[in-house]
Length: 388
Image (tube, rainbow, N blue to C red; front, top):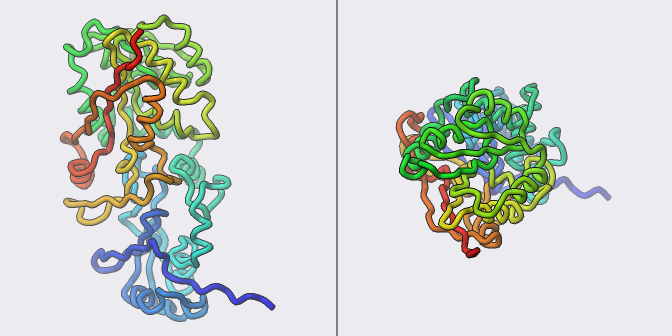
């Protein structure tokens, strides 16, 4: 005897909020959104506790709405982490609206929904939640864009020549803080290692402040760009794998650098975009700690583990953040502070300063309001707690 089909109920993670003249049904955990008219909203109210697919279709027969879910990275890796599109993506009514709500698991049963909260099986997987890195790759595939996510990052962060930051939180939060913090007094005459230097933008700025700068990265294309645009101000090294990078660090004498700088890379040491880490974060951080001179400091600028990818809801001028993950992240890839300190402590580093870079001028008003309340990045300063 066949078991009856489970009743479909409104997802327990669903949030219904009003945006004149319609309603938006959102799932902050899965970052999906559907616009609904009053007929659809009333149907949700009546059947939210559970009903058959047939009853849902009947209730939605005269209803209309639209998909409002944006793709990850579509508007920029630091834009719209809520993924709520300002415009309709695809109109739907009646049975098509029911199918849309089912596809986004806004109408679901407990077992089906719980099973969806896992990494993707492949980039074609439309069922599982997936990690942020997986969803970036999936977004590139769905948009028909070729290339890798690092190239998407480079194009969105920098101008084509790599000389300037594009208008974004990268410029108005990260870049503005960097320029204010790394003064001539802090950098003059200091031997500085820019670890995972990318295209050399920050290496050049450290050199401009009087630092004697070495940059290293595993990406050959980015190192070529660094040498082309900034080769006159810093020395750049290509190590083609994380293991080769570690070998280079281990080949240098202890105390070689007065300052080691890392930017937006620690999360990739812990959570690579593909597979498991080739080299452990503890190994790399230990090697970097060994290179610090007496009194030297290691400084990291990393996305905030809670608020970088948090959902942004409420008024554009007074937003609030929804953080659906913390200790058991699936989508979030940036480590929380306790996870970061577990690695750095094991590597022999002690945290001596923690700052939350504020927003400067130039941000979109909604981004500015969010950055004024919630930190997008953490800036951490470490010293060696192992005396040589």
